[in-house]
Length: 123
Image 1 (cartoon, rainbow, N blue to C red):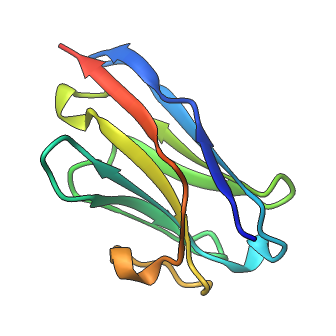
Image 2 (image 1 turned 30 degrees about the vertical axis):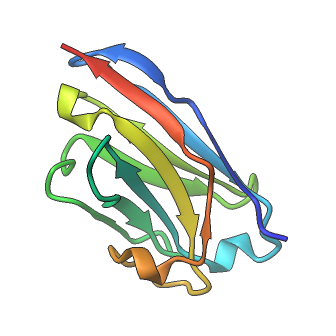
């Protein structure tokens, strides 16, 4: 059974940084794409970043230049480094995994989801 466990969320001031981690219990972790999404209160869950099995990445326009996703296949873990945080980045952040090595910005592409971690950015 696949489990994704996010950690690293919290409260930070605008301009600050946080690093989210997602530990995955996936035997073939190195062969699957991983994604990050977020959901603010009253809004739809939206794409943030994704990384393919080969390490290629894509980002939402709203986070380009500020967020970076990476993976450590030896640790079955994917990371989301978030810099220059803004109040509008406040949301629950979710890690996801696909049954494919290719990444995507579509929610439906991903088959497994974590429980989410709260990120709050104060102004």
